[in-house]
Image (cartoon, rainbow, N blue to C red; front, side):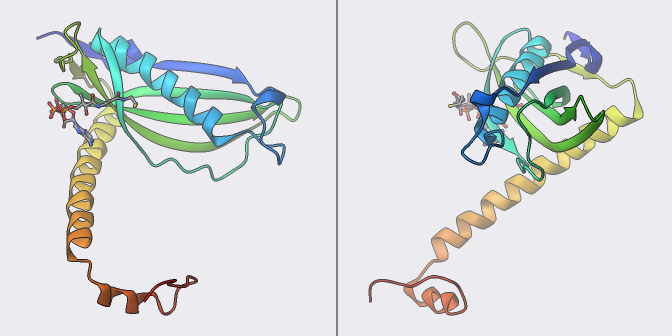
Length: 181
Ligand SMILES: CC(C)(COP(=O)(O)OP(=O)(O)OC[C@H]1O[C@@H](n2cnc3c(N)ncnc32)[C@H](O)[C@@H]1OP(=O)(O)O)[C@@H](O)C(=O)NCCC(=O)NCCS
């Protein structure tokens, strides 16, 4: 089985935030950032996989600080984990104000991508060589995230199946109005 290092596929895309990326409030649209994040994750994942990849899920998308027009934003992507056909790409986004010489870490997200072969079926990805302690930590964290996500999906499925009209009582303290009886 082919093996590849984490460094082999590490990818950085840096892009200037131009005025056409802004929303009505003058800040950069979250969707623009997501699109560049997805492109960077694709470049990183496909380089490791040696195949075309698709995005299955994106975890931890939180934009805690606004990104401004004129910021130089760097998207750092690194393969954190590999399964059989899936990979988790960790993404760190850093926005730089070049005039002030300041940099803000705006968010970190995790993209699960799946490699596909020419037949459009899922394809095995090379094993990951972990050369540094931080790479081992990220791999273990990805394993835990996978376990927590599966448990969360199961819990939500239970919540959906257990719903009865009686649960509407739970809304009494909430800021909503039930418009039917
Ligand atoms: C991703 C996709 C190929 C998975 O198909 P599937 O029939 O579930 O395939 P499998 O069950 O063999 O799973 C393949 C891998 O995906 C992983 N996977 C499937 N669903 C997942 C989910 N919701 N979250 C995380 N990983 C998932 C599996 O764990 C498996 O990983 P492994 O091979 O490393 O063990 C299929 O869902 C797909 O094509 N989705 C559309 C993706 C796409 O087009 N994205 C672009 C945005 S629209």
